[in-house]
Length: 620
Ligand code: GLN
Image (cartoon, rainbow, N blue to C red; front, side):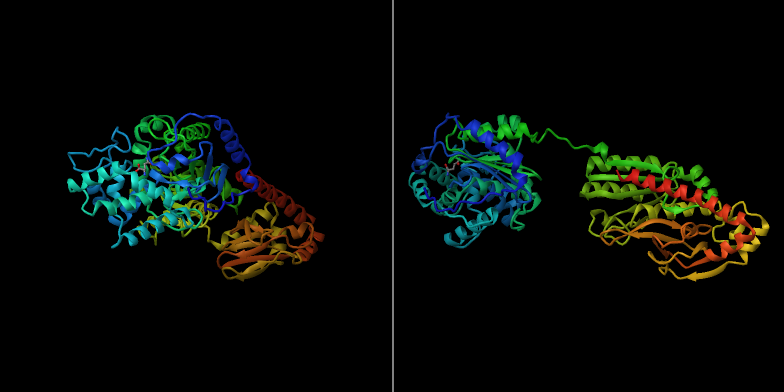
């Protein structure tokens, strides 16, 4: 056999540790397993080394783990069958392919000469008859064109140029009379119409492609990766085609051993008579094994043993499912328990503590699919009974499949006019849920989108509070009603009124800059402002916001040092400003001005400290 293939290089990063060690131990343990016979019905295959034994695992992001002779070339044989089936689905469509070959397991050997008489077609594409019928579907006007098409396809799958083992091909062509019988029988029944020798030539060449375990693991990983080759990033097959290929591998891929295999390994797989087996862990990785000695049904003995152990040790059986739909709601809370970063007056805080339960926040995590979306919409329906607004925070939810989108779309549509407001946060432009939001392809218009949950909470708190306070009544913020001056008598308030100057800011305008001298403090009369710090990476983080009646920059009164944060107006804003020097001046005659303000300041700092503590708690 040809050995012209260069040795591949496996990754050697630190991440190889546990898995490489596991594969090496498995390899060493199974090497002494010397049962089975090398296939000899294709004479050239009988020259294989019975102790050549390789294992490879490729992940969906293209990382390769190997052990033993994973770079040893051997012919792909029947492991090619699911791939040419996928190619036929891609080039001819499902309907045409189903005319040519069925989807039923046979319960017969791989080379059985039987057709499904009812439908007049081979039982499935994983046995020789079905694969030969599929070979006829390879597009191209000449045998050369068809061969080139096929090789291009396999090269794409492996991510490198493969070649044909000419010695094995010649051996198969010269001795493959059983396959010849199958092809002529199909010609006789009208199943194939092309010259059988042409179809067989392509089929024998397909079986004689040289691969290594590393190649097969990568091809398997392409199937695991929904049809995109993990290393080249090339999209080769559609997820629907992959699903059909994997289905047939599950039911027919291991010949007569398919039932036992499904029971013990539970992964879609395919074997070949040269001693290869590959298995697919959908969404995760591909496994390939090479070891020529075969069991009675034609599957590699060490190959089956390796797959059994890997599946058992890593819990990979398709039905040992660990999906956790119950964790879809990571956290749920009400605005009475967690408030936005908006600093509020004592009276506002009291209202939020009493009424905030009518605003609910749901933090969603993980992927949304049928089961997890069902949990979410059921909880939404329950909350809709007693909430005026619901915020759904999708920060930790990266994916939603079409079934989940359909369920959520219907659930949201039924919120209707009378239902609670629905606000979704952390849904960036590329998030699948975007399609359902206003401006998206199927936007319902009933949902408000905001960048983050704090902003959403702040807006909903404002809505709630507006029912209790006339928030934009300027007169309300006569100095004596401001928390910072709480407890001061008329005389002191009068003195303060003489010291105040008022400023107007437009939306986005900077009021205070970090590092500037702190020589005045402010009270918001109308509008709102955000207090933010710059993180080491340069991004801004909003730490609090202030609205009417709230003060900021008061630290100036205590240390008179530098500003420790930036303050920007969120909207048009009017502020009262007090110079620290003027306050100290007044305090000479009325010391209680300073002591009362400082006392109120301690109360407000305590509130902010509690908020900071809550925020830290919420980080975990
Ligand atoms: N080329 C081989 C044949 O047609 C393929 C069989 C197999 O790998 N099971 O017999």
